Amino acid sequence: MHPTHPMHPTHPMHPTHPMHPTRPMHDAPSGRPASIATPSPGDPRIADLSLNQWTTRHWTMPEAIEGCARAGIPAIGVWREPLQAHGVAATAKHVRDAGLRVSSLCRGGFFTAQEAAQRADAMADNRRAIDEAAALGAPCLVLVVGGLPPESRDLVAARRRVSAALAELVPYAAAAGVRLALEPLHPMYCADRAVLSTLAQALDMAESFPAAHVGVVIDAFHVWWDPELAAHVARAGARIASFQVCDWLVPVPSDLLLARGMMGDGVIDLRALRAAVMAAGYRGDTEVEIFNAALWATPGDDVVATVARRYVEHVV
Image 1: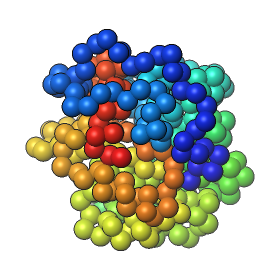
Image 2 (image 1 turned 135 degrees about the vertical axis):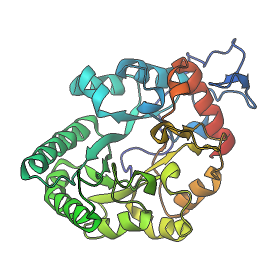
Image 3 (image 1 turned 90 degrees about the vertical axis):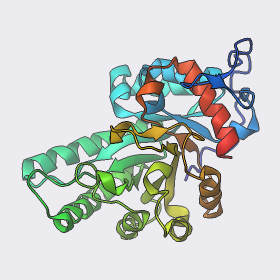
């Protein structure tokens, strides 16, 4: 949860920089006419909108921060690679100076290695990630827990290693004031990215720890298909640390990692999912996180304008 970041911030969101007021509005990257006007900076409908940085992956960290500020998007979900390229202290200052907040830091995790040296390296990297999240004032560090090690078929043992790593990290994260957020990934990623595949599995693991220290990520792309989703969103309650949206495209693109679509281009009932998340008590930001090669080839300001429009049209 974002106790220091109210849903409707009082700081001005650069009202002198409207989003391309004289340009024709088209939805990136399709080029079709936009169905609604682009929300202006300060529009209360986007007061809890966050741009996950990977949606505009081709932007540098400064470009992403300034692009959010121009569009009036009040929060940004930061990825560690561009963070480290720009510098942690420089990024933290740039975010503050732009009047933004950080909604999450992505990512830590990858706990499932069998070799002791690899596990030690992973734990050291996760401590660095916690330090980075604390420096940014990020309310949570998103954890992608890791898939099966090479040559292994033992899911049970891999999940045990995730639990053990989490138990080791929680005291360090709690001392830093950073909440760890377990992200279940769609089962198609179980082998190589995340042995947690359902919200129920993530909650079962998180519930061994205080909710203030370990929460869960609800990413629409990964969980929308789950027939038990409504019950587990309600169960999650105060453990919801981050909420992310995009859409599930049909047919599914051949590159499963880049299969996410802009909201409204797929089959997920995002408005209903957000309503359930809000009913469970979540009051943090809603991150738009889209891995899509066509978007990455589109000018960032066009992508951000489409994000804001589609968020209003299909999510809130």
